[in-house]
Length: 272
Image (cartoon, rainbow, N blue to C red; front, side, top):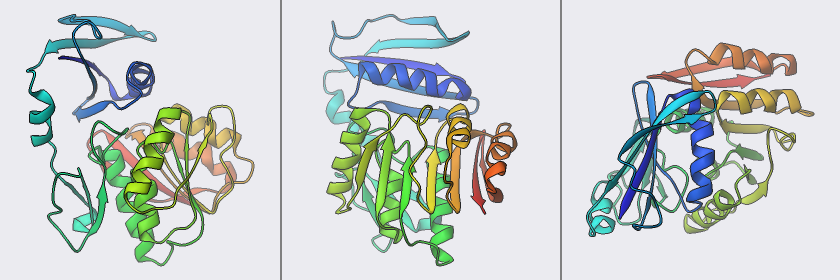
């Protein structure tokens, strides 16, 4: 088995992920640390190249690519490394199906790694969940909501379990929409999915939107809005991008009401 990993700066993550999804539409493993994001895919020898360590171009920048052979029993051992993710001060647990929830009283969400595009561990997902819970605690978890760039539908499922309905998942990748629908069904959630290129078409009109996207896509969304929501959670932002992206939404009357920071990343709650 070969593990092929690409490590890059956070601002290049969207470009790198888009390329890797073409090679592995069933899912991409993600890890993050201070100043870097790493995406990895797995395949049999002959399916993926054994490159060692090399540098490659992503746009005008270089990224680090590593490949390594991993043991044949990796598929079983890999499961041992995935633990439940506890979010929102213990209010939400996201776990693989083979793990028990450490907090039976929490909202329980099952997302199996390797079958999806994100499992809740990334700081941007954590902050979006925190903001959804914050809105729910203030009686604002009702009516339609859209999850832009839904991926594995983690945020859509959280929103549905908190009380929003109906819930719409938007993504440009067909494989992501398949994973989102499957994850929603596995969690007993009704989720409508729709394929939309958010860099070319406006999102649907709903009163609440959560958008965990990279900054360039969020700016395009702001430009394309024809009927903006009353409330919008945005993340996928580097801390030095947050104010600039917030300004892109201000012509629609959407102004920052809350902000969360985690390491290199930020999330904003916009309201009008």
